[in-house]
Image (tube, rainbow, N blue to C red; front, side):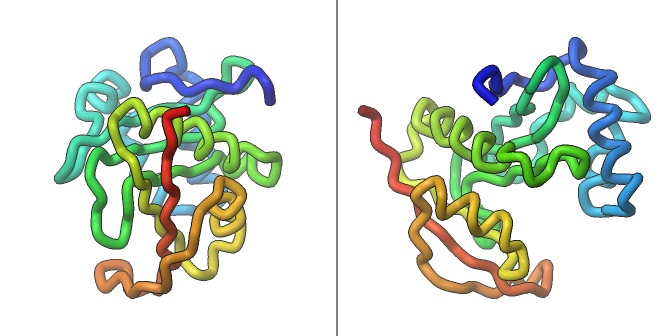
Length: 163
């Protein structure tokens, strides 16, 4: 775990990222597979079109031993029901501490971006993500309803310090 780092998506990790995307197909997770399947079709176009969305977003891959094990998106402005940071860990790498580490490293990037208070959300059924956020000093602000996804979400705040 000590050699983990975040890196901007790039061609050097193409094969590893393709395997990452395929791991979601293997477990029939359409949400994340659809998010990444374009990388399987045309990797260069996938890289070129990052990030997508209505606000500036910095995307990073979590690398462990030359393998992509997670993806994190840091939105430079809060998005209602999504917050500043969204992350996912490969289905093949879950329950090994990567979630805590990817958020910890993303918070360091958020400081450099200039975000002082990070807002995060997670589905109320996602106990693992709730624990990850709390372990990274997330304070529960309450429960919100995401009409677009038709689900209840926990909303957290993490105050960042630069010292």
